[in-house]
Length: 263
Ligand SMILES: Nc1ncnc2c1ncn2[C@@H]1O[C@H](COP(=O)(O)OP(=O)(O)OP(=O)(O)O)[C@@H](O)[C@H]1O
Image (cartoon, rainbow, N blue to C red; front, top):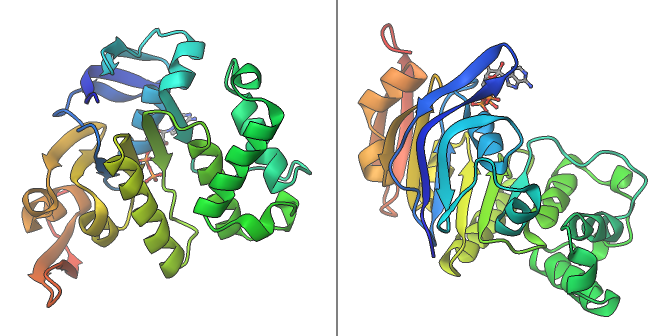
């Protein structure tokens, strides 16, 4: 198992640098890390930089390998990225979309024969509670169902590093719980799972580690207790907030108002 190490990472888009010398503490292996922060903080850009989808400089190391400049074929073996955008209306069924995601692996076709591949698709549909939707065309699915298919596409190849951009944003409460439990299980099994979340209560409940981004930089990182503080919420989110213990032992985030300072 290997940590994800980010050091002096600069990345962005043509005329818009977003990350400038971004450095943070090690992102633990075998753990669920929540990447949080306000809109436009650079969370998606950071995930895309790790996934090799935007040009980056600096150092991004995982599993003893430098990811910047790594051949796409090698990178595809190490990681999967689930974007915010949901699968398009391509006319494919759910099963076909999963087979397509598998075949995106450079040598996907030779790693499994067709029967083994269909078995793997069946396992994933089962694990995500999607079996009944296997033959459904993507365009007939609800937003939440399509988000589950996007998650299935990301995990079908089972790489050691999973990068998931807001995987629960379209899900109902039960599905959110199920997906976060699944992601934590995947992490417990040894994978490194990095998830962009806006819901700080969800992050506090499930993540082993939080990384707070603000204006293209790492603001703080660590366990929920250390990171989710009124000071951070004021500085980063611009709100006055309290964190109260709930009877279950979890933390409740209570927003009192907009801060006159910070952000
Ligand atoms: N394709 C793009 N081209 C140019 N600028 C972009 C592009 N995508 C994002 N940006 C800009 O990069 C900055 C960071 O965006 P990013 O999507 O990484 O933030 P985020 O923290 O994921 O935000 P959100 O929580 O709103 O999804 C923003 O100012 C955004 O306008």
